[in-house]
Length: 555
Image 1 (tube, one colour):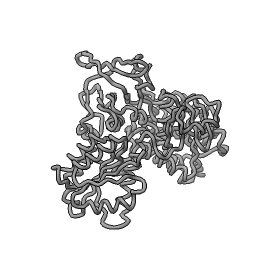
Image 2: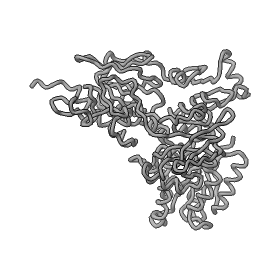
Image 3: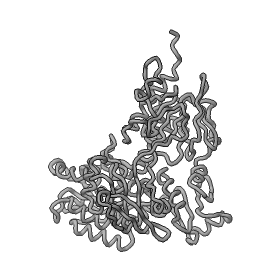
Image 4: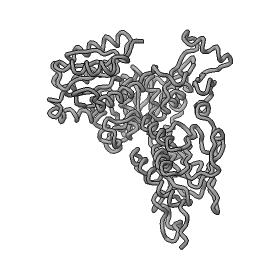
């Protein structure tokens, strides 16, 4: 396959852009130049018609054949919706054009607004470019650099689930058909394989029967790790709260083990782009945020046990440590941080549940989004996760319908996402509606939608259904001593019933009813259900752990 293209567009400053991009990117990308927006659109169409890929459009802020660069991006997006879009304004125009263009960036009309390089080694400019190209590369079905090979004769639910897990763990992967001539010699090493077959250079090959098989194969069992007899802090759950607790705890000298049943990042890890997280003006995908936090925690000494459900938590008594038990071993800890987050609620429609993994997905399922190219899809949910999923799906699907029971999205979704969705002509909001039925021949083909006010039903063709229906806590493994609210969220601090306070004083803000056990993030009763809030709680729990572990004063 030819190298992916970067299309540079400028009538007056093309020489500056071409020189800068040639020095940095000509080895790995096919650089194309255009002086008008119409010419750039034609180049993109020719590349796509030939089976090639367009990774990015880079344009100055003043096109000669469009009233605004935003009109150009709209036209280019209709040709290549997956390409990243960058404005590199000339220094003579940067300040004057910024007010009118930055509002468009907030609505997702393009990805970044930068000052055109004025000389050599403008690393801030190129850092933004490479970040955008990296995000684009993560959305390509067949990446150039492959960490894990998957051999499978079909895109069955298990193969898709394995790919989604590996994507969320930041491991580039690719699927080959067993009869692909390029891998025949490779397959002779594994004559007894069954499918899907997963190969990682570090761990050889595996005939997988579940996603957990893959996690254990690549990252090992708890018994494979040398863990001290009793550690300072066990973190259960690897979402933003758990990752923050691991980073801050390990960086301050605590021995930390983090256990995660699925992919590190939790629900936040499935977000295609979080644009309102502090410190990332161009946004960051949930997967990248989670992997950066994981690497940070590893650097400080955190041990990660990935793919292991915690079966029970045994409360330590009379000074004994708490015990976190899994099928593959146990972890004994002086303190435990519960940050298991929440699960999406089930739709409860039998015909829909039967098609999970065959067009029906709980959560954003970023890998499944790539399978939706050219099809109509439906997203159910009105929160930020649903909005982010819809925006991401619009890069691939022909149309995206957001189905919500409320009258709109404004009550439950951040305004920047509401604005971005309103701008996107591929996304339609269907208010006061619910999904009541669906079906297809072995995979989802249609859905039945019902108006919640009138009861009127309509049938809609759909190849994908993405269900992001709100939060249910994961608390079935917790001991009775940890008091929860009516919805089963863990109570902490002043929310703990007064009769359980000690000396008429409530537990600390993130402390539970069991000394030495804390809760942070979405699992906690009264939490904000936002990535930044969960990260803050994870960091805030560490001083409480230190205070609990500190020797009691003599007086």
